[in-house]
Amino acid sequence: MADHFQLRLVDSYMLASAVRHLVFERVDGQPLAFTPGQFLQIHFHYDDGTATKRSYSVASVGDGSSPNTPCEVRRIEIAVSYVEGGAATRLLSELPIGGVVDASGPYGRFCLQATDTHPRYLLLATGTGVTPYRAMLPQIEQLLARGDREVVLLYGARSEAELLYGEQFEAFAQAHPGFLFHGCLSRQARAVPRSSDRSGHVQNVLAELGPSAERDIAYLCGNPNMVDAAFAALKDFGLPVAQIRREKYISSR
Image (cartoon, rainbow, N blue to C red):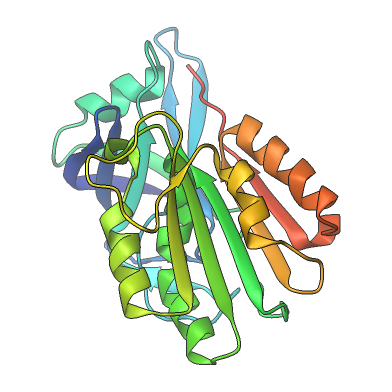
């Protein structure tokens, strides 16, 4: 059940030119119990007093809870994309260390399921849509330890500078042979390309992986255009709708 609480900012830094990583703790001192893949809502008011809210996936890397099982974290991390003229952008970009915001959650079902039996997970993301997968890393590690699973993360960005948490995913891939990470760069290749890099949009890299209904469960998170295009492509490869899970990130002012 969703809870209402206050969050105090304890750290923040820029992940990219227009994306900030924010670290909060609950004012009441309690941990946040969430299932990786879920999101929080930040509540605030427009200048005219109208109440509003914005949703942000929890990016915190918790313990190694089993899929679909809550974990507890003390440090509640989110990634915020700046929207020109956005009310939430102004609130969160100007929030000082020690500043407090109202929040509620967790919400959502974009989570790994303990009942999934397919041998490969295809995780697709653009922008801050990669944050749920960061939170899932301990669960992914548990899945890979079984020896009968693979996980592929296709992460789309315009350039290397916009691959949020890219080095963390690269390091995880190097430490876990069953995990593949492909940075899909649509506009500018790295100055020093890596063998794992791919050129173009994430949905266009799917053909290289040969998705199939027998092998794959797919997760799509991020830009609605990518989510829709990848959803259509996966259906063309024969995946039924029940094996394609989606979360769209829509920017609001």
